[in-house]
Length: 523
Image (cartoon, rainbow, N blue to C red):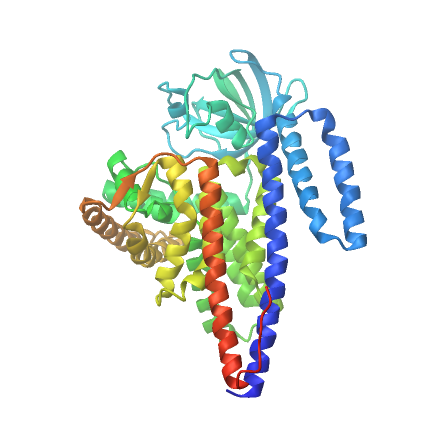
């Protein structure tokens, strides 16, 4: 081994150690911010303390930066999380409407349920027809915030401005993953649910042309062309490519959960990754031929990612994957090294600032846990597993297993082996669905949808076979918070041991080269 190679590896090793310290601090800040939100939600929060908390946090932050005490920013992050929860709670608690009282609202539609069946009726334990949508609105008393309108006789579009006269919904004691219905709304930053009275919805202004309107038009065209396919193929394509599991039967959902591949039915980094791969490959082929600047490739690919995100909807996993992909494309366009760990932390901070109570949503937790497992653990698991795809799958499974056990009381044993195969196959379904979106402008979306439907059904049939095997999944008791924390601590220790083993291997190479004189690492 040449001296230059040894020096190069030493420099890389020092850079990795510095990067680990920086990442550790960022992870500590994010954890403290989340801890502040959780503590405030459990212990309660007096809104009178919001201003003093935020002012003291700002002053202490300036002092830490001036005196170069980065470690002391951790309690500041916890205070900010505590205060940020208070701001959100204040906004929702100030809604004056009480159950069975009449309210008058006016505002913009920000989210629409596309199914005629009212999905909120499952929480209400009552049969309810019509549509559901969320409004960013103002009531007659000047309160501003988000309200969900349920059992609407009409389906508006995102961006429509409405005036709604309705009755505040009265909840029954229904649970959703051990969250009361009002907590379900709070976790989505929604103050209340309102059922409109007859003729209680008035359209003030219809949404104009916008990227979101274009994306929803494409979605509707694809779904219209998809209607000619068998029901099972429609359900699987909607789930795999659009994250819509509404057409899946109870048996189909159970099989997908038992085999540990339900994660492919939540649009996430897997789907966005394939979009980035396609956009990058196409631009690398055409950019030199068209003599375009280097930055045009990442820019056009970023546009494709945003368009796909608008089509499939802004769920927590979609937002997380989109932010991380845009960060990577920005770094590539600027010629800067991209660090996935930093992008993951930035995405979490951005989303929790927008929706702080998402921290209690299973979808948000599973999405970030899987991404964190891949970012932090797959590299070290490669020392034990030669297959990169299998190492990535195992890293994600290890991080999400306690969360799945907590919310769904199941642990899949076959998922580790089946997931990598399904991930590759689902990639082709996503590619065909993207092609259908592009061809929908020419009325040809049905052509790729036929192939996507056949492939999706084949994936499900294979999954059925594995689900029928004995002992491939197990039901489990819900782990306590202490057990979950202990699990992640032990997992972190295991990764540190694997990292230390890799460092020892490097040290032995150095010692062999220098004849035994050379390298001792102090911990």
